[in-house]
Image (cartoon, rainbow over all chains, first blue to last red; front, side, top):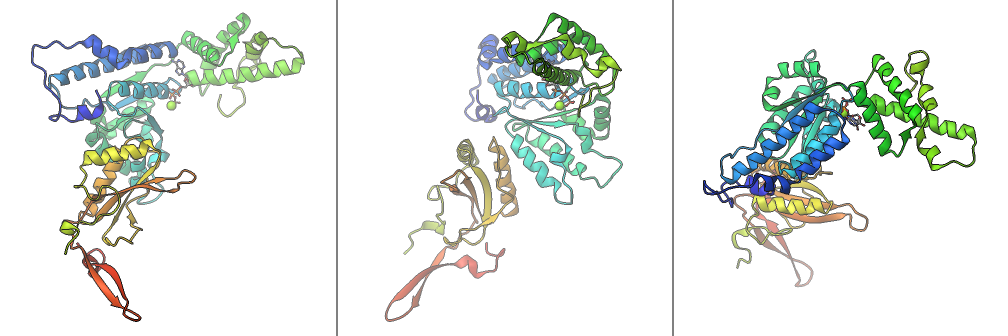
Length: 315
Length: 144
Ligand SMILES: Nc1ncnc2c1ncn2[C@@H]1O[C@H](COP(=O)(O)OP(=O)(O)OP(=O)(O)O)[C@@H](O)[C@H]1O
Ligand SMILES: [Mg+2]
């Protein structure tokens, strides 16, 4: 069912008689939603509560579609969401998938994701904010608008802050253009709670609150293997053991950003592997040499030596 | 003699047809976006056919995926200038084109007084003809 058919309520839609049977299973198949859910399961480690929530939302939308065939609902369910969780817990990644799921279920027409932060929405001077926010909104129409660290839009200490103007435009669009776009607000849990407390209008427009838990060290290990695999690398058995040791040490240090820290650690391990191969000056390398991350590539990290972060912009 | 009933100006695409509905406008925008053209909204109260540069209502819109945002701007423009001409343009920036590919009117004044024909006698017995829109006898902003 295309969006326009859905939107044209009284128009061309035929109401089914009360005793007609509709096929939930068929509807489910047509939407191809299972494929996306499976992909989500395969490509994202852990995140049990998040996956459950997505499944629930998908079910809600699917049933809503069937109900429409009997003209039982006319209102589009509110799908604006808030994703809360620590850095690197997969909020952006899941938001992308969400856009795809909503697209398959016909709730957004295009299924693209526009990811922004305060700087993309709020201007520098009077009269700058409204066009900026509107431009972003127009780009996101037909898809999902993802606002990272949404609470920075609201700066209570400065009553003339232009963020408020942006929030007001967003509120209006979230209410009036529910058919046109879905807004996902993301950020850390406590700051987000405070943001909603001081912006009740925003709270009442956000129907789905999804909390992203931190990963356990086992999950982080699984994520590491998944990431390496997708880049055509793998750990040697000793390398794997070393990385397993590395994870809890890194978790204790500051600026730990869950899966993102893992990604960065792996990037550095690859760098060391390349250096090791280069320094060895072995002319003939096997494919195996090229794909394997050895224990040394991991153990050279300063996290092991003096319990400090490795150098680099973000550890 | 009147060749244009009701004095409706005919400029750009579809102008001999009845006014486009919002659904039809949306389909046309969708076509432009799928072709990768940047769509913009423009308005004027000078209907002369040689008046090619209309005022821009906001910036041209780049990188849009969906027509809803453009329709929103059209409606904003209609609200601000309910009695002006408003047109939608689609600009193709690709090499070799670099020109508008679509242009059609989406709003017009309730009453269009039309054009008068004026004659100028010049050298010898020759006569120059030109059209003159009655609306532009009044100052800008007070024409319709
Ligand atoms: N469950 C997971 N399985 C596999 N990879 C993951 C998982 N969660 C996150 N990642 C990877 O970790 C990286 C960071 O994730 P993402 O950018 O989604 O986090 P985030 O919650 O948006 O972080 P931030 O709050 O800092 O923006 C990405 O490269 C992503 O692919
Ligand atoms: Mg993110």
